[in-house]
Length: 421
Ligand code: AMP
Image (cartoon, rainbow, N blue to C red; front, side, top):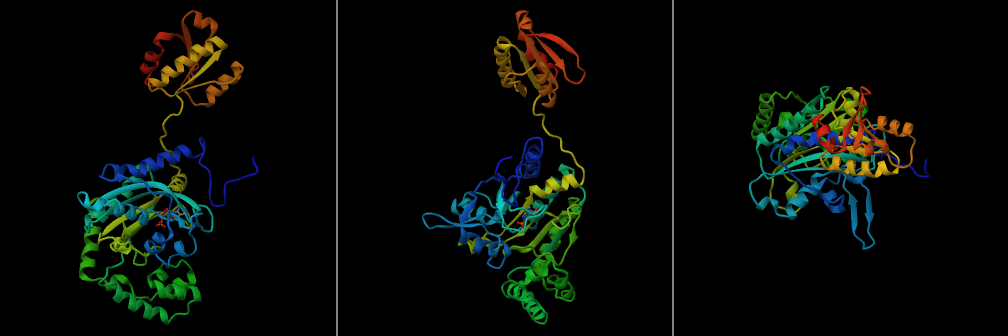
């Protein structure tokens, strides 16, 4: 143990513990996107702080309380990214991706995000997301596509114990009317100072308040659903019809608002039943106004972010074990200096032939070296001493059956290939 430990709210990914699983989760969560025309994008982990205050929202906890901020030596005010959408839209606008071809511009990303939250299981200060954004098209099929791709990804991983919640937040026509009705309703409630302030900046977010005391007062609150204009209503119906046609189950949740300010119309969340309070394994929605808020043209868009950490916890909760690639297929043990040199050459050859091979390093007794071979999980051990080499062979040991037989050095690669490594 060193003097240092990972900062609060963060943890290390380690081989043999969780790192291979994380790679597999990231791979599986993004696989459906890669099959659906989404191109990979990577943006910096820090951005101008104003990108987030403008793009994510001045009233959100994410910006007001949770952002990691820093002033550089040059005086720039930067923030570690708390989410991906604002950065991706910024990058797409900067590179004029929306002018280069067909719309929507479809992008996916994988990365770490930072929020100074109250750390607990499932809620971290650095967490990993796979995200997708489809920029520049208003089409119910696009909203449906993204939800279907997320659902396919969770299902492919083996998750079953979750549900998809869907809501519509209306648009520029109908939301202001609803907003006024809600403000009127909220003004008659007994709310604390902070909630009242939040209600002034973005009253819809009060609906999202998790506290029982607040929720109890909201039973008779006006519901956005009853205020949706014809366009929004029909859009929402089309999205849901497409989900149903694709065999994706969902529940309508009229109170689903989500923490970010930029959402319009479709909003959704995947909630897992085995995770306690931190139950959202992914979420997203349509954000038709964001591009303009960032100084770009009107580019109606939709996207989501899926939580890699929570997906991992959900897999654990459901007892799903992932099919992980074998790390070491063959483990070589040399007995003596000369044997080591020859075997080292063979190890390189096997690796170049695509067989995952490792070797006992350092000076070890044969007993310890065989223990390492065992721990490596390899299917075969290669054991060679000077006498074997004089005969031009190595001993090939099947680690499961314990059977051992000599194989000619020249024939080693083909022999192992025949064993389907
Ligand atoms: P959001 O940007 O808040 O909609 O988050 C999208 C997804 O990222 C959530 O559904 C979670 O799965 C995950 N997520 C968000 N915040 C955290 C956090 N602090 N720790 C772990 N996962 C998180």
